[in-house]
Length: 169
Length: 152
Ligand code: FES
Image (cartoon, rainbow over all chains, first blue to last red; front, side, top):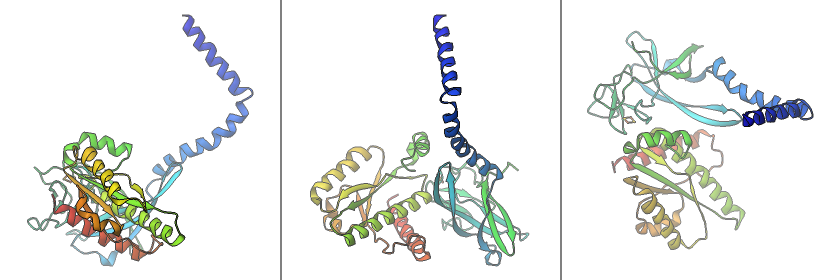
């Protein structure tokens, strides 16, 4: 009982202090912090900045790996992050851009990385394998297909955004 | 994986799969400007190369934070320390242990390392953003990963 009372009065005390003397100072301090806190969220939803990756004319049926660098902002901290994708044209000449990040534990997979499986993606870490369309080969460590990049073609250039897990089709 | 809280979460969930550790080592000296600059480039270079290795082999290789020593140190003493790092601390967890350095002076002591010692050339340019640097890093990481994979 008495503890509760104490708590209330402490909170009240804090309230008074904040809205009173400290209130206007706190507002000054809070404003920028709120901005920091909201910024990354806005970024994430206004979403996927698309990066130019390669000229569409360079693409073929054979998956090729492309690397590019983005500036990643985590709250107040900015860093350059290298991204990679395996890109090819499927049988309908549609562009497919797969994330190389293995769904087992995150190593980078390689197209035809194992000569025993020349038409699959191979993960060198624990022998995970994926078919050309990114579907994981059963009875290898990964339990999901490779993520697929959001993509967009503008003026003959392929732009890639964020990798998205593939819905079970 | 790296020494980051998020990675460590993953690490403790999947320890049995991560059997390889890399300890990048680099030195510092304020003796003269030329040497200091060279060492600073080496530090950046080893950082970039090991990060790139990590990015491609995150599910099997753990990259430790960089180990820093004094450039003018007594090398044999430093090796004793490094051996205690790799053998006392890391051996229990990781079957394959590698020390990676750009410092050519270690070459002479190579045999005294209990772990695998790898010397690899540093890039010499201070412009890390250049295409040359990127290509260099790519080649280096390809070779290093081939070497590491030969132990798996
Ligand atoms: S990380 Fe790809 S199979 Fe384990």
